[in-house]
Image 1 (cartoon, helix red, strand yellow):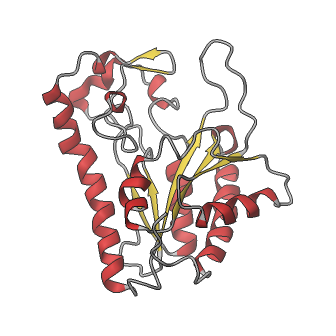
Image 2 (cartoon, helix red, strand yellow; image 1 turned 120 degrees about the horizontal axis):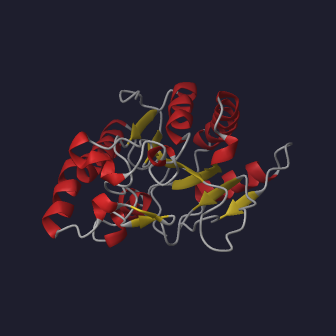
Length: 253
C-alpha cells in the first residue's frame, strides 16, 4: 500500500492474514480455529493499513497464515511451520519433509521478504542514503491468555520489542508510558526482540536502519473503535519520530 510514497517510514505486518490456500485443506483446522490468534495477529492488518493511510506511508503485509510459514522466524527454524500452536495440533504440518518446507518458503516466505528488501532498496535510491534513512516499523498483536497450564493473563496493554538498536523503541516506550490513559507498557514484553525478531534483524538490524516492533493486546483491537484508537495513537507518535532528523541515520549497534 502507498508503495510510491517517499515518506521515510516502512510499515510491515508479518502476521496480517489467516489465509490458508485450498491445497492445504485448512491444515486440518476448523473455521473457528483459523479465526484464533494461532493463525494470525488479530487486528494487526487493519491497524497497519490505517496507520499507512494516516501517515501516507508504505505498508507491506504478508498474505499468508503464520501456520503455513511464519514470516517472522528464521526459515531454518522447525517452528516456522508448527505442529502444535497454543496446545492445538496442526495436523497439516505434521511430519513435513524438507521439500515441503522449501516449497512453502519459495511460494510465500521469500516473496514477502523480497518485497521488503526491494522497498528498502528503493528508499535508499530515492532518499538521502546517509541522512534520511527510513524507519522500519513492525506491527503485531498478542493474545491476553495462552492455553498453557497455569497460564496467567498478560497485564500489558502494549509492548515495544527491540534488539540492539534502541533509537525508535526508547521514544515509543516513553511516549506510550506517559499517555493520559495510563497504559501498561511492556519493554520487550510479552515477547523479547532479543529472541523473536527475524524480520527486523534481517532487513534493518544488519544494515543499521532504525527500527522496532509493537505488540498490542488483541482484546483491545477487536472492534473498529479499538483499531481506530491504537492506529491514531501510534500514528501520532510515529509522526513525531519521523520528524526527528537524528533518527534517520545508519548506525551499527
